[in-house]
Length: 398
Image (tube, rainbow, N blue to C red; front, side, top):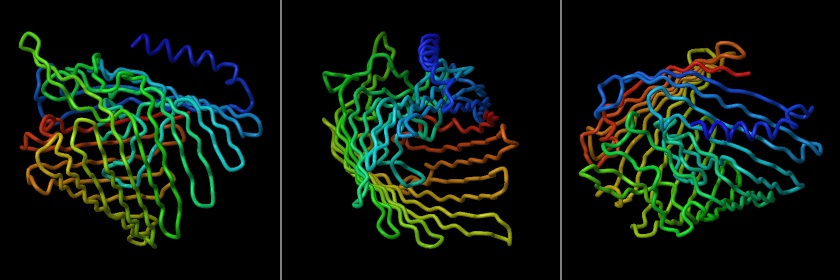
């Protein structure tokens, strides 16, 4: 933890000459979060409550009439219970040069691909920062060189990714962990270059009438590890194994009036495993101005499928139903409710709630809750079936 802080402090000091410049913008996001769990933990050493706090400043500096810029966004979290969740990261340290019909990004950054709400299958550039939240939305900064070609026939993004980030996992005192300890310090790699392997990726995106289309390709170290079981002195632990993989992806979004139609699909070939297909398809319909107000109410439905038999013996069939309420008020108040049902195992399902609103220009409250249920030992949810929780956050911006 001290080492992480020293690294971040060193980078901040190196950037001090830019901070005082006129073309520099500084913003800071900080929050304190309280999690409370509804059920007793499955494993010894875990707790029913969890207090944490994080800070995420952002420094932006531009020059050459804004054709060149640097963005620096460090992140640090302190957690009361889980030492593995107390960690720091550089989410972004990126130089951007904008040409007439091209852009070059060099440094560390986060790239988001995809259109679906319930799963982000094509989103493969960055590693998941799993200790942050259960939904996997938070990502670790990825070293990269990204060239974007802007043409009439679409945008072409080319990526060289030097260096790999290992996934973060909760420690023994953290919730949302498997039964056995994960040996995070001795990950195994298929590549002899280990975490220094150079990955490559590309994505073509274009808008055709009502369609937003994305086609992507990735070749490199798999972001999703498998696990190797080890037994030392009758103590079992799990060691992450990162194989090499190729992935082809497609993401589609079609907007027609108040309807959004979404699709993501991937074909993934991981070394020493069976290749497989995963897909998610659905729609979102928005009723504008319900009850003669400025409120908008959206309805979401998505079907999830994959035939990945490397981690489970049967295909996955699941349905996500959700609703999104936007009050369109000065505080930006929103509520999202979702429910995911496994269509093959009636007792396997999850539900989530996200709600937020600004208090004033600097303060914002947020509520997140997850509800988990499964009696299927092949289901990843089975190991965290008693980790239902609600989290209340108070965020500060300046």
